[in-house]
Amino acid sequence: MAKPLKIVRLGRRAPGLAAFVTFMLLSTTVASSAPAPGKPESIVDNETVYVVADALGTPQTTVVVDWLQVQGTGLLALADPAGAAGEIESLSEGFTPAKSGDMVTASVEQDGYGDYFYRAETTAPLPFDVRVVYLLDGQETAPADLAGKDGRLRIEITIVNRLERTETVEYENADGALESSEVTYTVPILCIPQLEIDGTKMTDIVPPDGAQLAIAGSTLTYAIPVVPSPEETVAIEMTARDIELAPMIVSAFPGLPASPDFSVVDSFIEMRDGLSQLGLLSEGHLQLVQGIVGGMDEYDLSGMSGAAQGIAQLQTALAQMEGGATGLSQLAAGQYAYLDSVIAGIDTSQFDSLDELVAGITSMRQGAADLESGVSGLLGLVDGQIALAQQMDALNSASLADAQTLAGRYPADAEAQALAARLGQLDAMYDQLLGASAPGLPYLRAQLAGIGSGLTGLRQGLEAMEASAAGLSAVPGAFTQLRAALVVLRDGGDPDGAGPAPFMPGFGATKDGLTGLASGLTQAKTGFASSAGSLALLSEMPEMMGELKSTLQVLAAGGTLRGQQMPGISTTVDALDEVASGLGTGAEEMREGEALTNAMKAAAEEYTSFLGLPEGATGHLSFLYKVDGVSK
Image (cartoon, rainbow, N blue to C red; front, side, top):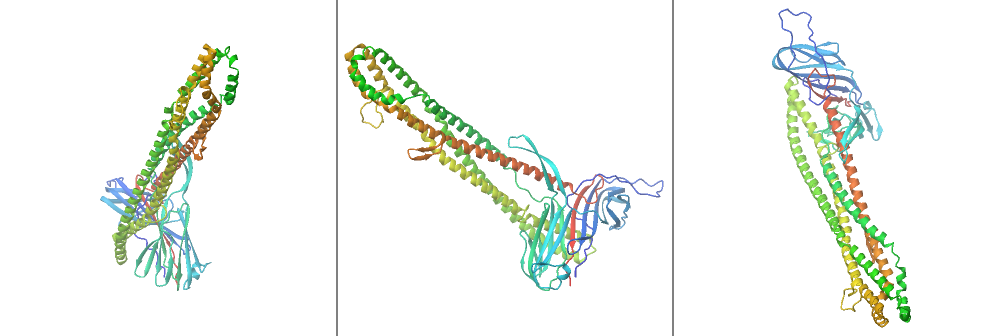
């Protein structure tokens, strides 16, 4: 048989909605010498809303039990808003509240502190709906048709939160500027359906994820914490014999039990700023190399390919060179000056910052690894908190069982009933904290694990960038070799530096030779012959400059160099910009999420009353929703 819901004299505490009220003392006949009732020093208004529903969850009766905790001395006037309340019934001896318009009024005489209880039926709309569906062997079945049947039973419980709100939240973006966005959410309400199942008749039970089980003898009690936003359905299945179900109790408390840790946002922004600075440095390197390549395009060296052939012709026409010897000498001097300016323009120190780029990427990789380790430490801390909560839950469960036994033994004892109610609230709170779904501690741990996984991916990406950027360290050495080769071309020396090798005269020797040619035809023949081999190398200059240009283009944009694929500076610039942009976007989304979470918390903290609060009172609100069982 389903047991009727008992309306106890103690209310449960929970957060709620503040309201402004006025109070008045109802007094028809007072002796002229009687003092006027005073105003209480403080009031705590604890409302517990009891709902009796049929087996499908449809409400039949709604009763509010109001517990007023009053501080003050002497004759005090109480005025509690209750516009949606029906008939008022006192639950405290000597306390005679009365309905006056939209207020419940009373006068009390006390010395310091007083507890006053009354009940009132109401038809005010509830903040959430409960719907229950029963399926026997896959077919939806009415509760009355289930009694005494056998089969695979599935019970689906749907809770719908009706407290939807839309508001504008403000938050700082990744650059510190104030942003705003319109968000829609439901005021968070923690709902905990509790099902008592006879273990002698129900087997192969499959509860929903996050359900908490308490066993007392052959009775299995499943508590299923959910925070519908706006709707959530949970289901439990079992193999049933001779079906009979006890009433289900749904406890509900406004509040957001847990939320993610948003403190890592500042670290993401710092990482983004560091990557942006590295990106600017790499962009400068890229522009420098592209400028050198563009400058090389301005010079036409194709005429040098015919220098060797021209030298042969000059040797056969040496007799005709006397008149032009002076002009040729001036030409050689100009070439020498040009080559000297090219050598002076190759400053290998401009590429020292490439090492800084590699070091910067290494530093970022180490920072990501440190954050990864920090999140791992937080996971260990949350594991410790879960273990502690489990120990406290076990202790509270034992105390709750004793208190429930005491309350059952002394049903008229208000303190025993209050103790059992409070311990039941604690038990529900621990169940929520240990729930695997949002927002319990296991859920928080899963969020931290996700952040740790993201940091691992970031670290691995930076490691790949570090490996790719390492090849850039060879660029300064290549330019050093190029400069040395040009110095040899200008001043003479060993062309490849491998030694021993024939000494190659430079442009200086050519210039001196042409100058000597102007002083006499005989000396010109000798000087020209000695420098003919050097002048023949001019035919190779276009190819050499082409190779240099190709090398610089690979350095800038990436490509194949001497059979090896090399990343360019542009690759580094793009990668740094992409990572920095992603970090900035992620930080802004997390700050917007933090603003939404704070708004939901504030809304829950303000929802402290179902009927209304006395002026200046602090409120606590909770719901007990009894769904009728299935009885033979």
